[in-house]
Amino acid sequence: MPHREPSQHHHIPTKDDSGNRRMQVSIRDETFAGLVLLGAALLALLWANSPWRDAYHHLAEFQFGPAALHLDLSLHTWAADGLLAIFFFVVGLELKTEFVTGSLRRIDEALLPMLAAVLGMVVPAVFYAVIQAATDSGAMHGWAIPTATDIAFAVALLGIFGKGLPPALRVFLLTLAVVDDLLAITVIAVFYTDEIHFLPLIGALAVIAVFGLLVQRRITRWWLLVPLAVLAWALMHEAGVHATVAGVLLGMTVPAKTRRSEHHQMTHAFVERIQPISAGFALPVFAFFAAGVTVIGTEIGELATDPVVLGVVAGLVLGKVVGIWGGVAVLTRVTRLRLGHGVDLPDLLGVAMLAGIGFTVSLLIAELSFAGTPESDPARFSVLVASFISALLAALTLRARAKVRIRGRGARTAWRRPEKHPDRRGTVRGVVRKRQSSSQDPGGRS
Image: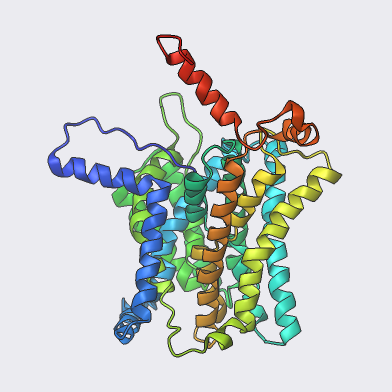
């Protein structure tokens, strides 16, 4: 999701307060947040494959909560159903902002990345389904696992390895990811709900409506909104709908337009307050309990030929590239849609690879697809492997593309007429630096 600068606090900071603010700024940084998430996943994977792996699994299955309310859940479930709702609340805020004032407000500019997002979900699902049908695995229920994109990791890696690429490329990725999030939420709500209890569902929607009424009237006292949000979550859980849907709906009720007396959008203000909790606590804890797959004792050959593993890896690594990059290549040739803003089709290849980092939402869908079945561990392990491969390929591709200095029509002309463009392989940067150093030399030396 889009990165925003932290708000300023008009008071004199104490030493402890200054440290807290520095930590909040770090958590809001997409690269730092991605590293925290990766660290939590690696810690879980190492612990789950260590001699103390039984302790990890006992911790993940430790149950607590009010049984009378059907909330006597394991730590693993609390992380997936409870803490992840905080992340999806931020997703709802971002969706509302993009639809009202952001990149999805103008359909003519957003249509190409929106279609790319749709193709980036359909094609990986087809890859997965074809492999399951060919192997007769009986694991077709996991078709949605390779359709998701982890925006936290994707944007973090683009910021690290995509320096020098057009800024519009980041806008394309964010727009694509917003639509991907919306579609993933729809998939979870529609395809991974076994039975709906309508009375609790109506109650949850009513509480969400009250929450929305309060924020629309600019009543934002935490002691009113937080209990309402928890109640909406609990009722949605009782209704049989995945409780993270409540987080999205709550976020979508927050107003994104400012009034005359307001200087900032309320959605922005909520993101600034909730994002550190989501990125610094909720997502890492979820990753810690979701990524702890024990592979010790499993034959590598058996794991590598597992149909679920093959389907997920093929979907995320290959399907995303074919769907997004291939889809955009076809759409820009057969329609009037264009990339524009300095972005070329080769620039988009690295972004399509970044979209193959499924991680957070893919892990969630893997758990929903194969909860309590033998396919659960291979599915989660394949998400980790595919996300790592996609991240590595994207980093190499983005780095190589960032070194190219002549783009668009100029690049094609340079390739056809190299005598007029001797610097087409990247020496433009050196010429520019030489001219800059000459202009800054007080003695006029070159």
